[in-house]
Every structure is written in C-alpha cells, then in structure tokens.
Image 1: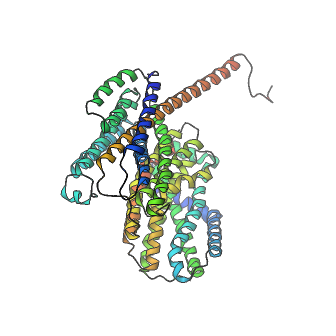
Image 2: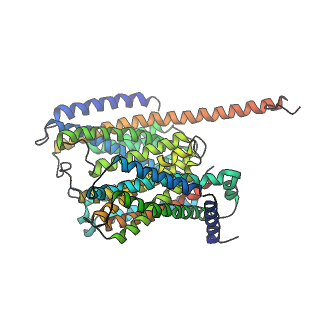
Image 3: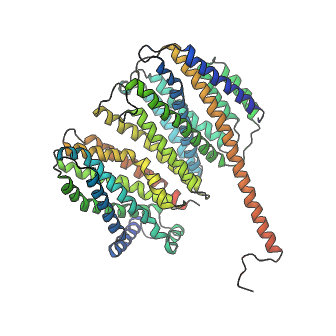
Length: 345
Length: 225
C-alpha cells in the first residue's frame, strides 16, 4: 500500500491541475458577478471538505468515548440508527418539507441522513482496530460518485480494498489518531474557506465581512472550536488527552446547531445585503464545482493519509522510547546501582 | 452510603463556607469586574440612547471575564492535599460533585451580577425601555450557561499544562451562542425595539443541552487516567 501513495499523489496533482483549468477557462462567466465568482471553485469545495472532515472527527470521538463500555457502545449504535430512521422519514413529512430552504430536495436531505448513519458504522468497523482499506475505499467511493460514472465506486472499492487490505492496525488508538488527523486537516481547509470568503465578499457585496451572514459566521465559530480542540491536544500531553479531546469534540458538535440557529434568528432581525446567489446553478458550473470538489477530496485524503501514518509512527516511537527507558532503569537496578541515591548510604 | 443529594449538599455547603470565610474568589471577581467597568467607561463615552445598544455587550463581557476568575479556583482548591484523588476513589457519584461545584459557582456569579448591575446603571445612565422583568430569566439562564460549561471545562483543564490559560480557550468558543443569546436578549430588553423571547428560548435550549452533556460526560473527565 505504500506504493499506492505516489500513484495517488500524481493522480491528485493531475486532478487539481485539471480542476484549476476547468475553473478558470472552461466554466462560463457569471452573468452578474463576472469572473470574480470563480473563487467559488475553491471556496465551496474547501468548505465541504472541511465539514466532512469535522464530521468524521465527531464520529471518531463519539465512538472513542462509546467504546470505553460495551453497553454505551450498544446504546450509541441504537441512537444513531434511531436518528437516521427518524431523519430519513421526517424529510418526507409535508410539515418538515415546508421548512426546508428552497432548492433543497427532501430526497437529498433523506440521503444525507442515510449517509450520516452509514458513516458511523463504516468508521466504527474500520477504525475499531482493524484496517484502513475499507475507509479509503469509502472515501474514494464518495469521491468518484460525484463526477464519475456510477460503476466506478465498486471497481475502486475492490481495487483499494485489495491494495490497502494489508494496512494492519493494532488497537482502539486508531479512532483517536483519525480524530487528530481529521481535525488538523479540517482546520486547514476551514482556514482556506475563511480566507477566500472575504476575498469573494469584497467585490460582490462591497464588504469584507458580513457579521450577520449565517454561513461565514458559523464557519468561523466552527474554526474557533476546532482550534481550541487542537490547543487542548497540544497543551496536555498525558495519557488522558485522548479522552478529554474526544469530550471536547462532542461539546463542539453540540454547539454547531445552536450557533447556526442563533445566527439565523439574529440575521432575520438585522437584514443584510443579499447573501449568496440562491436559486439554481448552471449545470456547467455545477459540473466544474463537482470536479473541483473531487480534486479537493483527493488532496484532503492524501494529506490525511500521510498525517495518519505520521501520527501512528510517532506513537510507536514514543512507546518504544518509553519501553527502552524502562528497560534501562530496570537494568541499572539489577546491576546494583541505585539511581537517585544522594543521602542514604 | 449516603444519597446523591446529601453528598451534593455537603460539598456545596463546604464550598460556600470556605468562600464565606476567605472571600478570595468573590473579592477578586468584584474588583476585577469593577476595573473592567471603569475601563469601559473611559473607553466609550456614549449618550444614553447609544449606551442602551452597547451596554448589553459590555455587561456580559465583564461578567464572562470575572466568571473565569472564579471558575479557575473551583478545582484548584481540591488539588491541595489530594482531595480530588480521595473523591475519585470514594464510591460517591461523580455528578453529585459536579452539580455541587456548578451550583456553588452559580451562586457566586449571580451574587457578583447582583452587586455589579447597579454600577452599570449608574455609569451609563440606563433606563430600561422594554419589559424589565425579562432581564431576570436572561440573567439566570445566561449565568447557568456560563457556569455549567465553565465548571466542566475547568475540570478538564486541570489535566493540562498552564491550566489557568486553558479554561478561557476552551470555554469561549463553545459559549459563543450563549453569549450571543445573553447580549442580544439584554439589548432587546433595554431598547425595547424587539421581543427577547427567542433568546430566552435559545438560552434555555443551550442550558438543557449542555447540562445533559456535562452530566453524561463528567465521570469520564473525572476518572480520565
């Protein structure tokens, strides 16, 4: 599977160049915004990638906490199934349907609920202490299903499960490593969103930052929460870090809907200049957007992969060092030399 | 074994008695928020009309910073003489300890708010234009929102290096919706332009969600080894 890394890297580079070409030259110019709008091909894919990574972080954290006790793991599983089922069917109820923003179809909301439920089990299956193969296959399936032909995911899945199948992993640490990796890479993508957002807003809305804009502001809060998550991990280097970080991730995820809700009301009270295009998108633009997202996802996956491996190696080295120093201490003891003996003779 | 509530009550009375005799946290908080008020008075010199729009933000920023002073001391007290370790090995439920600490902080911060609110009224010549009684639920729910998460994150930051620094770094991002609810709710009540009902509901939702989360996860944090 190590050999697959350079192949994937080359593919990603190709995707990124292709997406760049498509975004700058192939995509049609927007009637209202002119060429400025092309930043959407970097802004929106980064946002989607960041949200996906944060979501994976949340799931990994929940499972890390749930795995501590078999009963909680079982309860968590049933809660996820309940949320998925209720969410799926609720999307089609007429009363809920009316609440959905225009342009958002009930079927897509229902599919999102299914994917969310599925993701919980996929991650639980492959990071409970087994292998990375299924996960990479899953990401690539998500990856390719957007812009490529529908038969690709299965072929890809079989291919990558074969290639990555040997990626053996030992213990439940994997969930925590996954959480660190996705949080770090997610913060990077979120930063791209927060930088490109104002750059886009300035020529279009005439202001750098719209304090009442729901998407910019909730992305900023999300970014703050995950930066504090990384700060916590940096500041505590004991064995409890993983549990504390998982708890904080759960708190952060609980916070997100409240942030969204509060700013939504705040904005309806303080009307802002027209936010976003709304309505439907030119299919040619949507095509380029999806290609761009595919390129960004591949890139994110590549970075996550190397970071994941790096973190695992770092922990292995740490363990080996701890073991070595333990051996040394016991060797000194058995040789009759007592360390730290100043006064007593 | 004693019941959940008697353990919580015993811890709470112990904390209140300690605070009553030393008055460390309360004095520090009072003086700190007094300084913040005075600095704000020098920084902004608003007319009565403007002050109604900004004072909601000022008052809660002052209380937020002052509350951090109290919250940092919550658990530090238990570290001396390994009290917390003793608690960990005892069969007493972890949530009794958490609730006692949270309620203790709530009383302390509410007391601070009751003492400091008149100062804001004096310095900014405030007159409430909306329904003034709604300030009470906003203040109570807002204080609980700050204190419940603050107590939890203070317990969490015990395990980190430079823990006094960690608490605000963890607490503030998660508290953003609560702070928005408190500030916008207070401003709406002071100006009387818009109803504040939504913000009271928002704060109530926030309190319910995070109190549940804290009670569900506190044992994990206390026992994390």
